[in-house]
Length: 213
Ligand code: SAH
Image 1: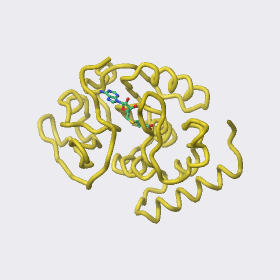
Image 2: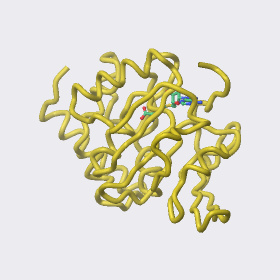
Image 3: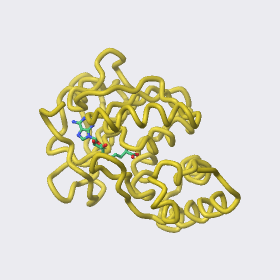
Image 4: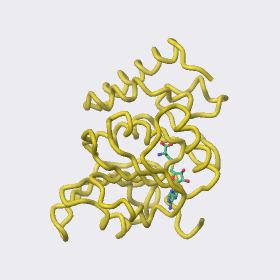
């Protein structure tokens, strides 16, 4: 599949639509306008790639709505050079957005097939994360901790302790918490023990699954 002027025009419109829905961060909107989202979907969905919709990717998973990606990314307040842990690599689209913003991305996916497919694909299109691995995101990636930012892209029944431990002091974690729907939650680490919590309304994600590898 290729990237054409038509695709570029469509994602510029998508970025404008997200701005109209309340996304303010110019760098986030520019990332959405730049990244060829249609390449992250199976070809049968290509025409829909630039609508604000979630779509199935392989292994029964979904790529999040562009609005959700933009909303979570905006809350992270990404600065160039920061280390960011993403839980739930999925299609790799969110990882590409973080990479585009200049972050060093560490991402973990628990479905082996999806992990392999996405690792190969991200490399091919030039959005290679610093580190991509297969494993249980509840445990984070301890080897490279602590992180400036952590983003969880599946619905977590609770905030995993290991992820809290892997967040730098002053760092931000954006995580949808709850069964269905989830409440978008921002945690800011104030010091070794203190975390400030903010809530940002309801979203719907596939569940962050436990105990299956
Ligand atoms: N960020 C993705 C969205 C993926 S949907 C994108 O941009 O496309 C959520 C992903 O979380 C799915 O791929 C799912 O397999 C994965 N997931 C679910 N439970 C997980 C766990 N415990 N650890 C890591 N990944 C998990």
